[in-house]
Length: 301
Image (tube, rainbow, N blue to C red):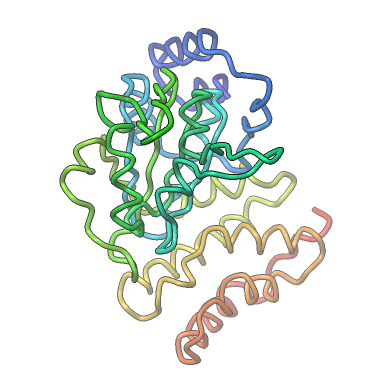
């Protein structure tokens, strides 16, 4: 990963600090399987360097952007770049403090405390990915305050205090303006370095696809990247909803096409059909048909 970052253009100073971090902080064998190589590489050197500088400076980061800006791809890449085990928490309306910190449970006829994902991450020096943090309930967020600021502790009432391991970092993501989301309060935002994620352009989408799949004609990937960029533009202009602007869906469609499925059908089930309004769905379908015109076939490439 470090060689790839160096070839991509990340400064030698950052690479040297990353190399020292990885060598200095060891990973417990029991959680080494949580260090996972991401399927896709994030492209955007300025964003990479902003995140790396902040994390190397012991700061936690908040990735803010619209749908399909690569927030989760970047978060996975960062955890792997630092060679740290990763815990991912997807926030929703039913997630509470017990899910994050831990809860009483029975073992061998005894009541014991079972650590939650945030506690485990803190103990083992992992990277905690706090996905869609602006969907969380207030009581779930409040338990994180002391973990995210200078205190770096989790105080579990009636049990113990967890001192957060030095290499532990938290990376939060949020889509601004989504249904079910809310404004983050000032106290929480102040605990993060905030990174504004730019909209993916055609070249960045192409690089993501190229890095995710081998032996595919580059002209085909350029065409798919152009289709996705057009969908972004239509969503931005209010012609369609953002449901079709799904980077995971695009990658899944290419994967299906590689297995032998017709690319138009693959895009239909992975992109078009995620929009339930018939008028919008027709707009997306017409765009894909116009751009593709049976020009590409990915099976067996």
